Image (tube, rainbow, N blue to C red; front, side, top):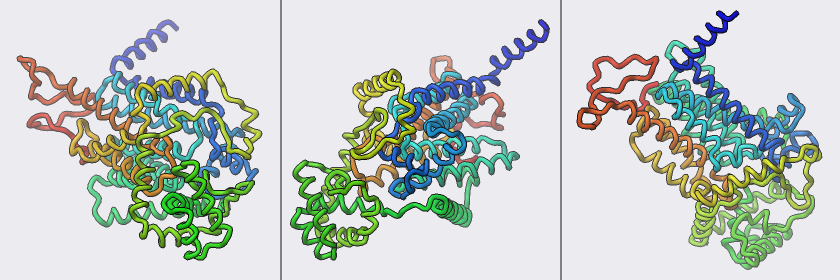
Length: 506
């Protein structure tokens, strides 16, 4: 018996020394961190939007497409499998920490540095990342789905060429995550385009035009097929929620008298005309600069989600008739809202569960109250960090990071192309809010914040690893000899000197 114990002890010590046990240690740490975060947020922090989707997921309200039906369907499936609505918040934490573990393992494989791999895991505890991990929001789902695709892409890149089945299985999984991201956030499609390019480049290092076209057609077909399947499963009420954008522009760019004239020219009914005029007066009187449909537009109780669907055509006609005539005011208004989003993002911490006035919190949520002790501890951490490091919670900083990622031609380490496309995803996502931002809210910049933090961490780890791997010469200068490759990788034949892998090959 003692001999068996000794052999196990020797084997464990050997695995620790040669590093084969470290990826499993990272997995255990990631699992523990995910469990801790899920415990803090249990049973999940809900906003008015997510409370509405919970009613729909439980079948207590009809599904509508004001909020993504795919999220209500996914929640419904989780509830049917587990019997508890809190599973959704736990799954969010699992996806985040699972993706971070994959990235940490890749950093360990390339650098053989335990500290650098732990730095990647630490991203999940950053105050501007952990603040929304357990909030059931479509913005969080978009961010974690795209991060999962990024982790899958880097994994596929490292696979040996003979593992064809594993490669394609991972690519299909990435396509499913990407499809979910495209369906869960209506304005998130621009962000999925560069990530889709990452998937294609992971499948074929140098795809030709035909492969690009074929892959694009497959992605479009999967997204449209997924949307049709979700609609068939949920039968959502049509809301045409995009009409909130023309409402916002009309009541903030035009005066009340101009709104009246515009409504009459477009053939709007009396009810819509009067409500638009009242919204323009209310926004002007209360100095409300955005989100005019929900903040200023007169609403009846209960809230009628189909009202916009019945008047969307008239509202779009009013917008197309009036905005070209008032282009200067429109540009000024949109610049005002966008700069507020970039420089004055609010709600950096969602403090528990809330519903709109007149709405009801679902009884299942009331049965599982929040842990106030952990909630206040998390709030102190996030709000204190927001005070001391405000740039982490502001859109302008992550816009700048995404621009740097896109414009720099080469980064330290092997993932230059991947980092540039990750920055392009963030950049396109932020710019998509220029004509559409309804208000200033930190959750609208959550994906750029997450992707930017991951990208900066990977850049930093690659830079540190390169500095460590270059031995010093006699005078303290870097030696021109090539660095020793990581364990498990053969050196390149006849190297002419240090060469940086730009990520051009899988």
